Length: 117
Length: 111
Figure 1 (tube, each protein chain N blue to C red):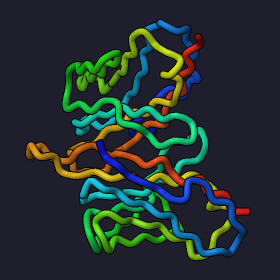
Figure 2: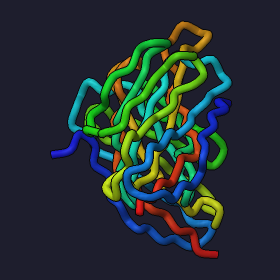
Figure 3: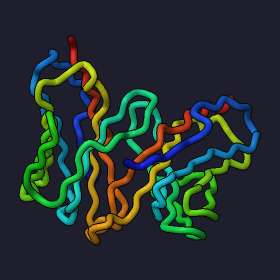
Figure 4: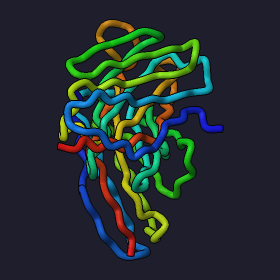
């Protein structure tokens, strides 16, 4: 079972602040993802990484940025938060199986619920 | 048309009922299929992971894939109040491609 941790779980902060959402996984997974999910709505991929120093934008345009300096760590940063950034942010990871049959499915953290006032 | 369609519900059933949750998709290249359960204010939790067509059973859960109809199902037997959650289907072409998620079906199991 994948262990993936997100902090903080909840954040309420004012407009214009710089925010970093943390995501760490202990399974050595090479692939990591950030999704945005509004209440009752579907997941939207905003960033992903296939390994250290590799980051790509997802399907949903986002003003956030990510970095992948270490395998286990994939933080997401908003330089200047706005009310439109209010949402839930979910981090996920996946890695190769030991059987050679390809990637395991994605495993998720419990998310950060972000509210920008 | 979205790549993956799923009835959002809400679906309400009595405890002990058999629940059927379904997704349809349009891309015949999808080969890997997943079901996730998401409780309120939590991240999605993987329930089932299947490859190609056929059935897979795990306890009270059975996942069914019909690639000819582009239709997948999740059956929950002897449903419990603790099964009340949103169920997301997900699929991908290869295990290296991006995963496409359905919007989720909200399920309530009434004691």
